[in-house]
Amino acid sequence: MIRKPIFILEGIKITTFCIISAAVFTFLGLDHHSLLILFNMSVMFTVATFSPSKKPLSLLIEGAGIIIISTLVGGIISFYLPELSGLITICYGTLAFLIPRFKSQSNIFIIGALVFSISVAFPFDFYKASILALCSIILIIIFLLTYWIFDKHIIYRSRTYYKKIYNSQRYTLSLICFSSLVIATFITSYLKHFNEVGHLYWINITILAILQSSSEGMIRKTAITRIVVNAIGAFIIIFLMSFIMPNIFWINFIFLSLLLFGIFAIGYSFSTRTLLIEMFVLSLTHLLGQYHHILSIDRILLTMIGGSLVIITGFIVTRFIKNNDKEETIEHQTFSV
Image (cartoon, rainbow, N blue to C red; front, top):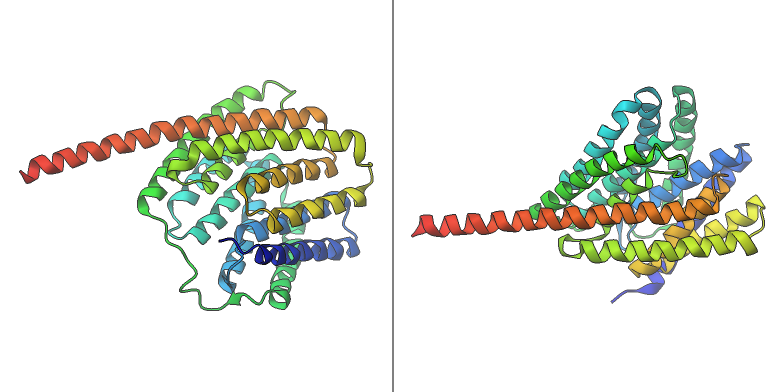
């Protein structure tokens, strides 16, 4: 049974942390663009370590560290070695499912791979990376202080916190992720010839998000749900940005914060959470000055591509593994006789 008040309190705490972070960086004189990047980073801190139950302090530090490193390394590599960024994205995403043996750690590395994919699309040099690194230190201090003050569920011994992932699930999901990301790389290279299609990294993000949210037997259902719900969210944002929301930064920022609260407070339903995340992403894109109505349509298209890749590769991989298991069982039975 879902204890809804816990999610509401978690949403209040997380939104408070992100708003405090934005207020601090506004006071320090950062421009709106940098402010939103750091605001998004603070959101990723909380997404990577989210749980309404008790959280070990070491996990919070690990989650924040992975997000910072993924952001900085992704931007730097894409700026200086763009030809390697695609290969590293594939390796990072695959290993994020393969290496971690516990669900909480797996979430951190998958979100890290997701953040890396975003940073690759927005490269920056060492100078900007150094500025972001300094701001990240301030951000992680605010993150830990906020949890220390407001979160009574932090624990220091995490022996009972971690939920183990079965080896078969790790191998299956990592193989599906690898296959999907490899095919996505070729599709992305093809779509780059069409200037009308932007933010192609959304294909990789869709793949990672679907696999993170689903078990082996639920991949198709999760992918279809995400495709449909994302389309609904995109059309809602088109309506809001066309007829209701004024072009005023702080009003839109308040709306963005309300969406953030909703993701954690009432997002215990997968469909509701996916809808709010979709609206949050497009609203953030709008505030960054990169939004146009065609972008929402692109978002639907790229989500469909990423979801379709996961469905197809998931079907092939699971069938292949099941056939191998049957053959091994038959061989084992024959040998035993």
